[in-house]
Length: 359
Image (cartoon, rainbow, N blue to C red; front, side, top):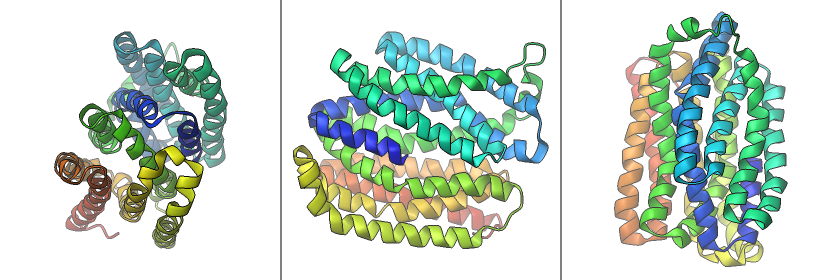
């Protein structure tokens, strides 16, 4: 995620806010479509493979995801641009391969897969931008995901693709899918709506602020990726969770203090994002709490609680955009991000407590 933020930061130095917003709008559509194609199988693999060790589950899940991504990617590729379709397929397969690595506790390979994607996508997108403009950026963004995602297909076995094993986990996968699509909407629907309602320039300013928030969110993201397989295996992780929350608090304070000095100097076209950055940075604290609690609920095979929490957060985000955004403009849009993650953390905690599972 940190390298992804570097990608967006470099684009901010190349593009005007309007073009910057349009690229993000298209990538947000492709990413949300990819989440739909994965259908919850990523976290299903991470949850069940450490307990059961069945390779058939890997083959069955990637077969389902491949078919879904080819269909959805083909349709959106025709409607928007072929590069959007390629990105959907690449993102879906890559999501599966990194889930396989997490399920096998191969954290180093998981890390290098992400680093490889980011290191290739950055120079390739910039190079293709000068060839095909904004859609060249999308193509350069898609190719590395395809390269690193294709090895997931080796788990598909002709005689026994593992569909039967996957079918046995469909109930859990569908609950995870509901949580994933709601979670994805909380991260992506705001950009799709803002681009359509407030315009691409406003989305561009909002996107830079959100990208700094996303860079900060690498901490809760890593925390979740570590905690889920560990908790699924029965390990105690309380100290790691506390340290993660403390680190996110310190990080938020640093960003609030430094952004008024750094942003006008590094991104002069985006000076209007400073206040948005300061407000959004506060959201990393409830986000870290939410990721810690969410890993526990998934490990306890309670994706329904995660789904309900994300639904509450998504409704909060949409209402925030339509009310705070209309009332306070871009500042209100930034406030809606903090409110969304706060509602997510509180709802996860309350539902987990109601079920008798301590944080």
